Image 1 (cartoon, rainbow, N blue to C red):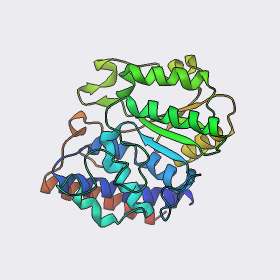
Image 2: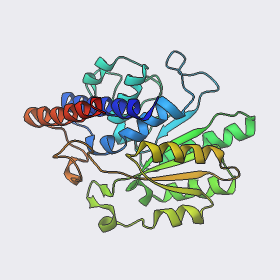
Image 3: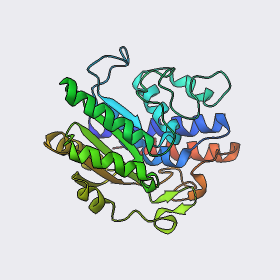
Length: 278
């Protein structure tokens, strides 16, 4: 995909997020929207995955450690063809396979059930260790919330990853600076994030998480890095491209009402129209 195609796809992913959460009447739109560009690049450009064979042995692995942003994950999987986009409207409904957090037993394309913050990181490190032991060449990616790195388990896993020189592993930190209680630097500041990961023997790359040129360059750099894991710290905007959600902690975990849904979709339609003019 070229950059414009990626931008258009990310906009469709955002529409899926808003639609899913609206129909569920609950969920986590803010962090799903901030990570939409990262999700899009991973599943449409970076990762070796096949919707027709979601469990193929040599596939790259993805762990959504911040599992509450499942709406974004589900939307990118649907747009990539793992299941019908129409199923997004069943999010969190009784009987739906698309529950509030990722379920590896029932959702095609999900490699790890997650949601308890900090634990997905450990699972990803374990997958990367397994690949090294077995001599497999698949790569492992995990998306982590910046509030989530207040969890001690993240750093236990990072310590092992650095020690084991897991160059088949990429941490992506969605640094939108907001968690459920407010700005992360006011709740329990993890800054400087880059220096912390460097201390754990990671190769660190700081990027604008909405700039596909920077995203592309970062993942290429990570792939070329040998002898150490990579941490990509992506500076993002919570609620990206939905006017009333941007940089608002209150949209961490609530659904839009009918009027708000209409406004949100109008915002995203305008983004799409602008992209069509490029």
